[in-house]
Image 1: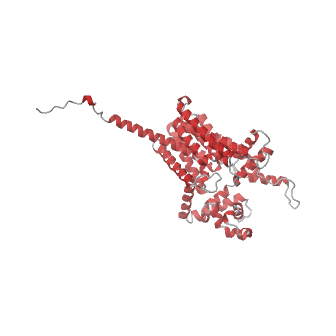
Image 2 (image 1 turned 90 degrees about the horizontal axis):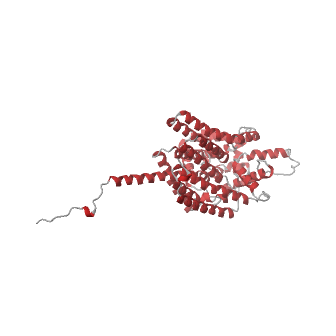
Length: 481
């Protein structure tokens, strides 16, 4: 059972050094962020500013008088903005809005007033180092926590978090926090920790909807393992607490979003677009290749794009054209229907090619790193990223196969489920970023067990080996007369 007083002083000192170094690297990123925000970052900041200024969860919509030729009212325009904003998970905009509220002075002063948000990202990504230490300590001890926190602190894509205003840093923090609470639930067999893990998984879903199925399968592991070892009553109670508190956190937002969209919205809208792109075999499951495959159709509908490179055609235009194939359906429902037709045509019609595309996307997700706003990848960071992924993955496999540890098994299963979701939807290097802290720390735990087992077996062999007689105890040699 992990206890604070059992942590050696040297481990505390080492962790403090790691935290200072990691926090310093992130502070430099907050002071010198990327000069241009990505479209996703612009959406998050725009929603956050509307929450801070007006208390409205809406994107950047045109304000002021409605043009005379328009029959739409200002309320209708505002409602459209609110519905479109539901495409984005709510946790990051609300945390950004909280940062505006806590910052001294009048914020946000303008659309360019984002310095406060870079420092919010600094705090979030620095706290991720703390939670990485806590997870390692809960799994195998303080020094595992120090090792895991050090890698998390120095891993470049995580250190770049304050530079770009995306949801991945907050997702990484909530994911590692949820699995830390889950590790304590396993180690202490404590029902309150199962409830805490559930609440944190709820925060995960409000930040990263691609992890929707992770808490369900973590609860399933709890049900099966505890049911077989400590009784089914205990297993059912633990799994139910995790799922119930997860639902308690998510449900208020679900009610709000459903009311705004006038249809069921568990967390966000827009899942249809990701599923269509991910299952579109001629586009190889990627947004850019989808644009290339459909450019002729786009140009027929929109001649303005005839001389434009396909990568510069807005993805929203392409997806709107696809949705237009199904009149009478709203955009997300139309794209979901198109995705189902992709599955029938490609998954069933050409399963070999479809399977190759799925494998390519899984490899794409884990062999590429989150670039943090940079335009091009760099070889040294790619090599480092792949090395970390491979070694950490081997450590998790060791923890599951050799130790059969349910906490590490939950980490491994969560990573596999998230990978499966992205092989069916869209896969990018940035989607592995929220999972990297648990992958790193889980891998460190597995390697800790492997090293301990090697050391113990070496000691056992030394103990079984007969001791050599001392020099002064050797019998005297006599020579023949």
